[in-house]
Amino acid sequence: MAPRRKLTGAQAELFAAVCHHYINEAESDCNDTPESVPIFSHLSRAQRLKLVADVAIGMLCEDESLPPDTVQHNSTFMAIIQILFTALEIEVDIQDDQGDVGEDLLNYDEADRSCHPRTAQEVEDIKVKNALIEHRAEKNLNKIKKGKDVGEFHVEDANYGIDDMLSRVNKLKLIFDGGPVSKRERDSIRPLNDDEKYAFRWRRLCDAALQQDTPNNSTFRDAFPLCNVNFDWRCAKCDKWYMALNLLLDTKLMDYGSATDKALITGEVSYKSYADPSQLPRVKSLERNINLLMKVYASSWDPKLLAIDQRRIYAICSNELYAGHYHRKWVVGFHEVCVARGINFQEPGKNYQARLDIFRDTKDDLIDGCEYAFGCYEDEDLERVHRNWRPKEEGPKELGFEQRTCSGPGKPDRFSNGVPSFRFCWETENLQSCSRCKAVLYCGRECQVADWKRGHKNVCARLAKERKDKEKISQMAKED
Image 1 (spheres, rainbow, N blue to C red):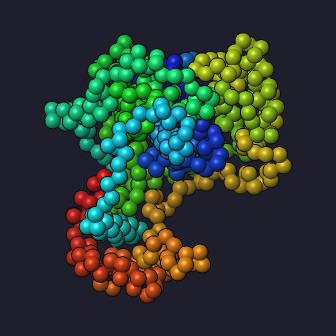
Image 2 (image 1 turned 90 degrees about the vertical axis):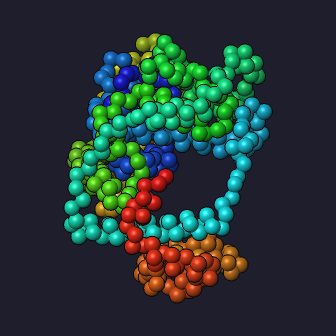
Image 3 (image 1 turned 45 degrees about the vertical axis):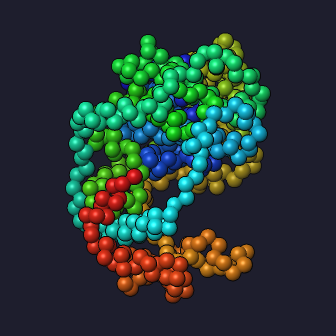
């Protein structure tokens, strides 16, 4: 499993923008650990930045090798795609909230924006399903703790039949039906002001990357060139962006060695993973991989070079001049060498290899301040910075298994006028199960009585009956 080729043009510009975006996301602990890529997301912040730098160099710099075909680098590539999805979603949500920036440009499918509230029965079914999954997950976790052998992780390679292929093609109608946006329509779009350019930034980058995937450049048997999608950068429907970008950056670009490799790298670990016995080997395999990767990296981490990988990403991917207090001298020095060698630092989409070469030539001469994170302000406590960044030597003991909480509505606080603030309780200590169904937990009698009145009395008998049906719960856990 590895990328098949380098990225160039608008696709390289998009990838570089996401990698550059990750510098700040990682430093601020914000949207930097996509749950669907657990190996990447459970590594330390410094290790994740190193991997992003490695992958950026491999995908963008023409004289360098493609990223290594390792579980950590392949996980990083998939994580970068997920980080792009999050940036897109936030951009759409923010613009939807503001409503006055480029509102006349947006393309909505009004039918898809409507909200269909769940019925009371659907809500009840969801509560029952979640309670059964959490209960079974906890049972299976306890068996693992006692040393139960769950077997080796292996997934059979998929053998798609004609029905599967037709189903996949049918799903593509979402982004191809009706044909591409015409050149005439694109040319008629009014100019954007600076606020609008920023509001549509990620969608404009993605649109340009999709338009580069022409029949001549397409690598997926030229069957689905993405320049023919039925939307452009004005689209506010995230589902379309997800499908098209998955085709571009995953399906067309990644070469999966086996179904096992792909399944190990992608897929969230949660209660459902523990409730489904067939997923337990994957959980244990993930734990082994994460612990090994963390231990190896922690032994080589140098706090004096804390920001070296942030600088690497910045040098290759950024077209903006900025830095925290301790890195200004480096940014200015790096920029001066770029100018001296005829490299336009602020021109996006070009000169990745030349910029990497300049970084390598100057990094030792401009090393001052590298012990501080890239965004650190003046006079920040260096010991605290290092404490926050120091990588751990092992991952979580119970990967993806969050501590269960009380099922009650919680207690009123002084801001809620006597009404429980969030309609559920945050307590995690000294919980006891319902004596009848055994499937839900309470912190005390007050929460238990309140939850009984608000609906548990309607499902308690059902939970008591279904909680022992391991096969049924396993199937529930497999459902999306």
